[in-house]
Length: 428
Image 1 (cartoon, rainbow, N blue to C red):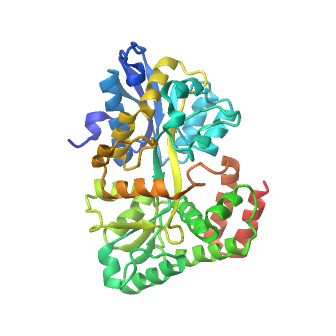
Image 2 (cartoon, helix red, strand yellow):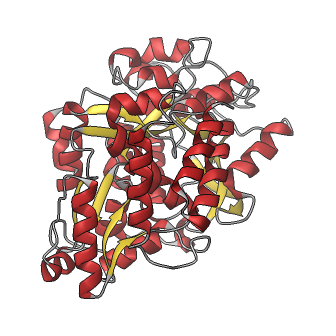
Image 3 (cartoon, helix red, strand yellow):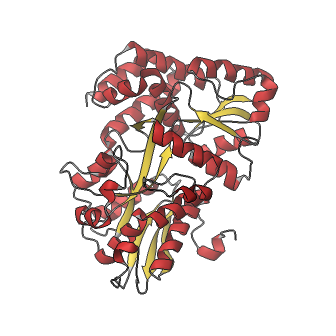
């Protein structure tokens, strides 16, 4: 049954709060013998449309099955407003009015919020649920604060270094559906452009940063990538070459006003045959398959971004326990749901990500489509590195300095100037 705006009052391009009312029953095997808390629970999430919304609602539905609740919409703020969803959340946190649990990216973003005193530790919940043995070893350090405590519960993992393409467009142009290097992608994108469509679809400034970091990862490799976020290597020849590749790819992209164009619009260009390729995270797959109803490997195709085969650049959405949460026990019940096997299967099957848990039973694979099954294998066998754009590897302040440098580069395409600015950004 399709989810409608009228039916659930969540399908608006907004950031909202979900207020959970009524009694809580049992929620998960670890709590099966004890009654749950009752009262209210306020969650804060930016998942309010498309596959994101479907994933959140599936998770809430599983929670409702374990612990009956009534979910009500409780205010909204446009996710495309100038201030943005993070600014609205910060306003509430600064005002001492936190939601009980709110969404946050694993890694530096989570650690920064913990250091700022915005989050309560979750070590006891981790021990109760046995999560240190059930979440990936690569991810566990990204769920900790600087004090070593756990502060976030991951609900899923997305791969960010992906290349999406339109098979019909590539076939007509004689272009490669899985170029192994950025040079090969440039050659194929030029073939597409000569045949009529745009070579590479790129959305707004956020999408440009995503493209930049993916091309940079291809240029420096996983070890070089990790070194960059320790502050070394920004002045290297490999970084300079990657920035030249970025400049050349942007020359083959759509000339739209990127301040007004989102990643979905760029994905739609690929889906409709107006562009050949897009570099974007695998949430694009849920949009292509779910929203646009295209057939995998027929209406759209995928491959690891050129130069990154065998590397899984990831981001992970988590939920947290706010410091000073008014409904602490209810929030802990929600977090136990987020980390549960059933909750993760429900959420990721609907959203298009893969579960963070490592103990998936073989029969669970039937819940996922061809891309997700492929991605699970890639996560298991690949080298994991974190994403800048999605909060894993660098502080918000460092990311802001990079954004300022990238904004200038998008206007002047001056590679040496951009590299100098990145070197200064790394130095603080």
